[in-house]
Image (cartoon, rainbow over all chains, first blue to last red; front, top):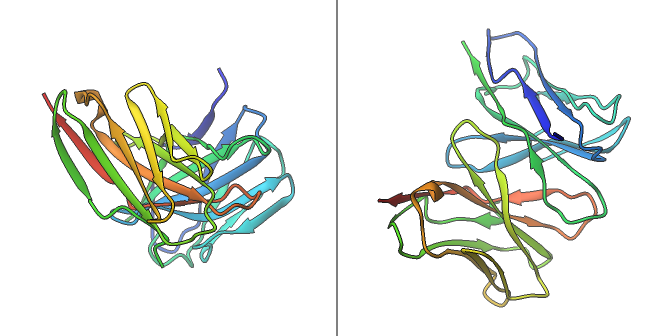
Length: 113
Length: 113
């Protein structure tokens, strides 16, 4: 079955450490997105990529970095520069040229300890 | 600057009755609107969408209404079922081909048996 996989589901990080969240899709979708969910704030866009080897900052990109070396993969690194990294992170993908609906992964809960 | 707003954080409805979830937006350039449903610790799943050229779209128990002059959309669920209990997000697209969606804060729906 085609889908989008995020791993791990739960992640704990010590302050000052970088951590990378994985996102893999086998839907052959061109575009991929990273969102962050905080209570009462909905989903906010961190980074997005419409094509391999290209990506753009979203609304809250500070303290994050991404890469898009393969169509299937769009990992997100939460760096030590991110002031408040504890959140639920969602990856999504979309096939360009169709409607605007995303397919979301099941999310990664990151907690800084 | 919250361009998409869901002003009701929560809604409680009796099973079998109608659930109405509301969403307001400020940007007149939005041309496509979507509703997503989200269970705890899972990614959102697409529910229903509507283009700005329409004022209503129906899919089974779910109907979305769009009032462009009021910059308001609503999701009606009839009849409501306990399995509908979840967080509902409305989202809007800015009319670009980037596919970036702007999400509201979400409304938690509880359907009581």
